[in-house]
Length: 74
Image (cartoon, rainbow, N blue to C red; front, side, top):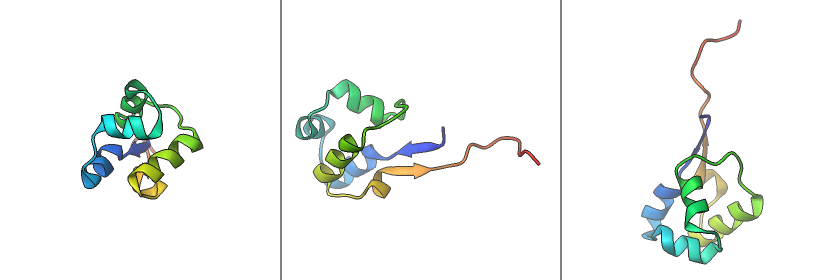
């Protein structure tokens, strides 16, 4: 997977539980878990905005791009 989501890191830095974040941003624990565990295929910008607001962070604090490692086309 090329996109890494660091919600767990930001939760730890803010000393906030997944349950508290879920309640603050208004999404289910199941959907937040999918995001947190990197299983999501997409994220709505409104959801990303709500997470950033609740955790007082920037999108770049939550998202990281890592190129897939594999054979290089050349």
